[in-house]
Image (cartoon, rainbow over all chains, first blue to last red; front, side, top):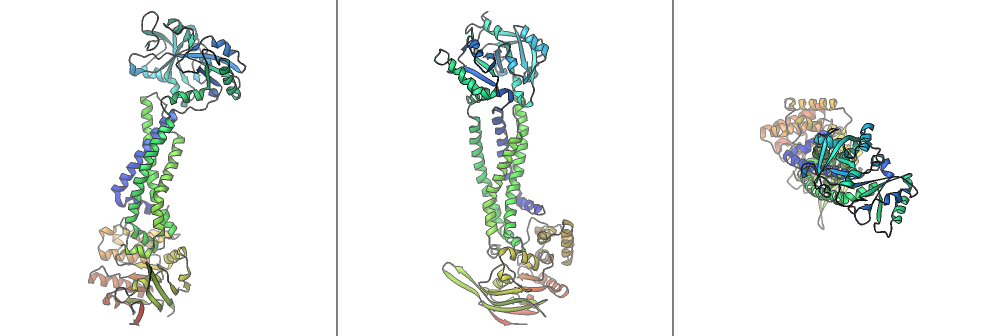
Length: 384
Length: 227
């Protein structure tokens, strides 16, 4: 610690250069923090409930419906505890920019999701009201929905058979998620499948996908295979996946977020490595006589190496930490703008960020530090 | 007086391409404790090379250097660094202060290598600065000081860890006559009152006049003792 003022003073020798280098590191880590928050938001977490849920969809495509008649056959497969189903509706609330996920679901759909908390009387109201709908807490907050409101949705796929393009739902409940990390699940609206199926102009008797709860998560794979075997060579072949895999595949329709983030960050950090590396080398080159003076008065080769390495590490850690703090604020703002609570710079991102800071500091500082360590005092003093 | 520095058969040569250039030829020299020696001679005679060898900044090609009973020519670089920190104070022609540190912090530098606390380091540096008459400039950076003041700070840095020997390379080479005399007076005071052994390289006969002995080097050989 007693050498810290010496390291700090060396960094402040050329203030403008240090500030500019620091800014470039800050921007790099701000970008890293924000992109990693997006990557994490698109990463499906393992959960106890999720491990026992399977998604059965058409083998051809997620948008291809499956017959309602499959329900009874799936229920009979050994290992299946419960089956629910859902259908994507894709309705718009007032205007296109107000888009949020909305599904028609079977009455027992909520039983599949113990992580959704809905007061018992509201759950009962949902079962008793054909036009009933429930929304997540985030969604209710965003649009000021209250139980008892009537919510009109404009159909984009399924016009109503009465000739009107608007479907009207009675809001009977508002649910929230048990865990804060699942808050993005509160951005959806669920309504009754029977109301939807009767009202739509086409596709009656079909569902978008089935949700299957297995009695033993350890046998989920076997049950999935049994379901797909059952419908093999039929007109509606199925593809059964764990909920995690299904969501991952869904997210991949946008693109491989992890790969995109890694590619961008790879390019950014490579540039920073060259930029900061060049700056550090130049800074040390200018100070060779001073480093020789330190050696003259008794600093060992190793001490000089650590002093120079300390500069680059300090620069990387300060710049990186400020960048990550700004990313935390940025992620918070992003969450407020989109689907509240989904974007966050968590402990894992910080840990990765810290490791990148250390690697960056060492990679950038080691070549000039090595040079400083090896310089001969007599030769270096002549440069004065 | 007891011998503090003993050089026997000291030879130094450099490799320039394929050519081996011998700059010091089998030098024998003794410097007593408390002595004040001026090394003089024309440019290229090997004065600074000899000074660097005595100060442990460079290594002999042949021969031996014993200082206060320790053979420094047998030390590795780590041992030599520790030995320099404990035994030698350096004063250069161009002061060689770190520009981003205050005078006080520059003087404290050698003490960072000791086990002294921050408070003790500050106190010792203040004493050294007071000794060279610059206690009122402790918080000034080198850029805010005159050449003479910078050299005083450099001398304070050289003496702060109480070394046995002060090695001075043209300490007045960058100063005007009046300031040079002041600096030489200060070195003389350190020699007389504090018993510091001083080995100084100089071109300046007036500066050399402050020394007890003047050794002349010519083409890498001790040409004569002018004591």
